[in-house]
Structure formats: C-alpha cells, structure tokens
Image (tube, rainbow, N blue to C red; front, side, top):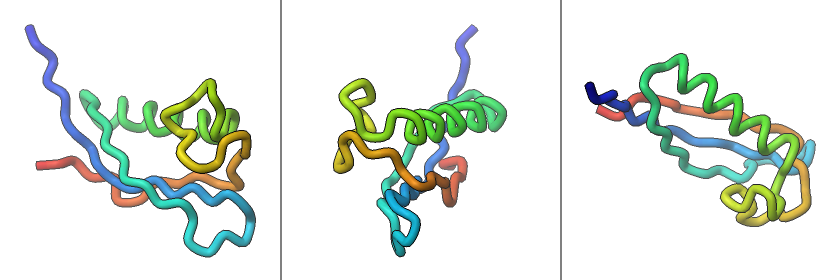
Length: 82
C-alpha cells in the first residue's frame, strides 16, 4: 500500500529583530499525509529557526543570517495545492 502525500504551500516570515517592518519572506512547500502532520512539521521548522537560527548545523535555513537567532517566525497562507 502506498501512502499518498499532499503538498502544502505558503510563506514563512522571519523577523530578525523587533522592529523589522517586512521580515525575511520565503516560500515554503511541505509534503505531508494530512494537516496533523503538517502542524507537527511547521512546529519543528519554527523550533529550528528559534533555537538554531542560521547556523552551519542547519544549512537549509542559513541563507542570510548565519549565527543570528530570529525575533519571531510565523507562517502565512499555508494551503493545500490542488
């Protein structure tokens, strides 16, 4: 039996300091079985950003801010791709 994954797409906004007006906006795409798994995956991504920031241990997130922890991380427009 094969497990079918659904694709969820949206935007992640990383604010690197308190008065960051726009934040670092990046597209995000996640394959999950259901919304419950999506919620778990989003929580893991947020935790990684808040604890590791942009470090060598987490290179997929280290695009611009190596060594800095963000002020906040949030997700927008997380919808299932049809």
